[in-house]
Length: 589
Image 1 (cartoon, rainbow, N blue to C red):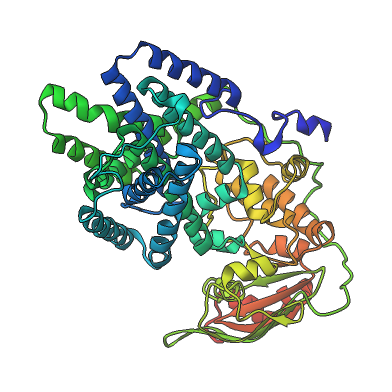
Image 2 (tube, rainbow, N blue to C red; image 1 turned 60 degrees about the horizontal axis):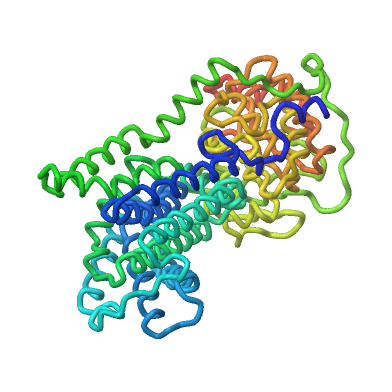
């Protein structure tokens, strides 16, 4: 495997590559030099605007967390900032030990409580309804804070800055340092399983649940983290201004910043910086030119609508264009797999393990109104075996998989995993228990790397060596390859590779060979045949490629109109006249 590991930089998923292609320490060093130079050469007015920009960058980072990464529309981020500012003001008035360093953390934690309180009811909402719900919270907080003085407001008790950063020049450096530390935290978040989970939740909640990710917990984590960052931003503003008022955090200002964040793409570092600069300097420039401020909000709103129409922010679009140009110059070669034989004519002989079956379905019946999609189906998936589930289109195969994996709740019958019923478990709990699946319609997010997706699909942390070996086994590109650069057929291979390396007791694959070339199908056949022994996983395979079924499956179950019409060894079942008639559409049946 030494030759494989040379295909990408050492260090696995946490290799220190900066957001703009530079190593992370170098990117931070460059940023530090820029901040120090700006603080030295700027006059007081420019310093104030630069500090406002640094604070706005923190606000943009909170939008990048909740909307950019998790895909949740939140119009109340400045409400969380107001809570952070209020907490800092209260700590200042009451001389809480630790100074602004501690007060900022307290403000962030106070905002987390609010984030969880708004996040819990918001979990039941989607799209426009969620936007309205979060905006209603922002307006309610406007009313509450509008009737109260912020701590220190009536007595002009200014927030005390740390002694090291008590000048305007030094405070700009402090605000920029806080923003940089948050960037570092987000950098490692993006390369963690939680970061990958948030991206998958944004892309497909069903796929996330199938990989054992709790969509509820993921969204709550996004609300909590984004509220924490926004609360710190509010505390920084309190330290900058000395005393803040409710007008600094109005609901309409929150909407305007959301439009900027959506337009520039604040899930990217350059987008958050650009958004912060826009939020701070555009109003100043418009005042100088004599253009009404409302026009700026209108323009950013139109830009946000354009993003919704195109599906990509400006920085996402620029990054995609750079990747395409780079890939055109240097195409990514897949890792070299072990040699693949010709399409096998005989399936491997496997010995059924003793004990309870890996998966058992008893008298399963699924109805949608008057339509019976699955009609009293029973089947057994023995341990260490591959069972094929075949039948014509509309036979109920995908409905059966949806039901077994917890995506269809309205059914009768039983589903047992290792002899124990799992009917009471939700989809993500069934996945965690060991029932994993792929989807007929590909649900692979394109905004993460190949290696990160492998970890998300596996449902556990993998070492760099495990990732490299699995990618080589399935002839997939190196771990640091953007998923956007991977073709659809290879994404299907990646999905199978990721699910298998998680070593679940049961794996259900829904047409994994769809869209594959003959070479890719041969590779897939080899790997599917190895899954029971290599990964200790029993496999239920839905597939229309009958030759693939013959080559890999120990048993075959045939569905037609929701009923089992045949089951047994592949050669016997696939030559059954009833099965042939079902596929050919015999009208006499």
